[in-house]
Length: 310
Image 1: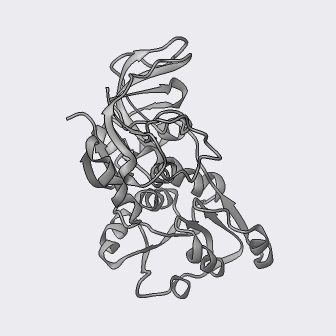
Image 2: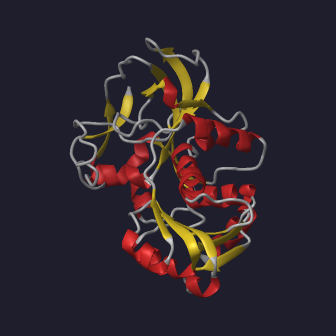
Image 3: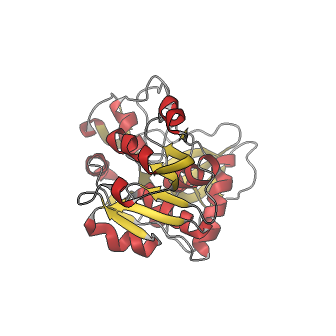
């Protein structure tokens, strides 16, 4: 099969489009014919070698852990799916990924693709959708009537977070560049703050949940907008517990794994017309290097997706 593989850690130039062995199915696996694969920041962080202490890959390996496709083969002991089913997943990051024509995925990590989405659209959902859902609800405990501040609201994760928070009944404050204000308002934000023109801490007050998708200085400055007992949830780096305690607030951190149950919930919201993925760029599989370069700028609008079929 054709695939993108990494033979050594490094910059975008280490991504090689080449022939690779078709995956072998282990117990409980399903073989999926990949139609599209989403790009996420974790992809280039893995490529750079930043996570090799946590996830010791055997080189060469195939990156990409957002997939939408069709079940091609059922492995031994795999249940719940049949050949021809349209599925999507955020598969195990420790295994070969979706920048390929085929991927082996545990059946327990698969969910049925939203019927109203194309494969390209669906491939932009799993990792970002699960991340936003779990950060807001499982870690942040966001409920109706609360106020949430979502940073980088026009990005892949942020755009889902805005929609989920609005669906839940929260008041949504969001940061985005002026060029993306209309999009973020359309997604449901009650107030959009131009982070280039206004210090967000001058516009946001008494926030129950801050969703930090940026880290660094943004994370440090976000403490001041929380109300007593509020929580800052980061997906970049763990907010310091000592800082949270000193301010009378809480800190949360999230690094997600596969979650088919959440994907099934999200698919329902999508098919009901309550949530939609924002796809910024679509490129062929062979152009994964260019996709990584764009992702690393940190200014992609919505999701970047690699089209494998069609």
